[in-house]
Image (cartoon, rainbow, N blue to C red):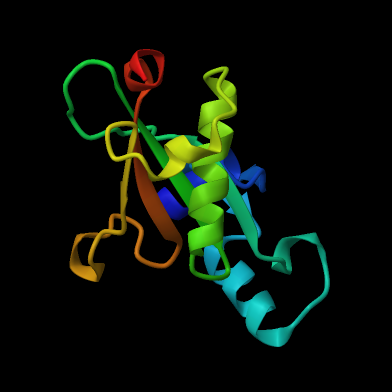
Length: 136
């Protein structure tokens, strides 16, 4: 499932062969959610936040990078969005914190519930225009 893909590729859950030779995460998303509710204390029942380029980016003009902040277990906070933007800037070789609120450099949004591709894992989309930081 898309949840198995997300858990394995973004949150480094183990992958195992499932029915019909399809890979699935270990634990599965449903198992993970149950562990969270029960408060079982192991490495999988903690909230985790990751930043990565979108594997399935929306179509934008050339030069715009589509990133995603994923958070497993809770909603993404404003601070985590800012941290993600700062990480993107550092990756681009820039340390000017003022760019994180510059709309010529970054835009971010949360899709409404009915448009979320993965509704049970919170995620924020961030667009980054790398060329904008070299012009400023």
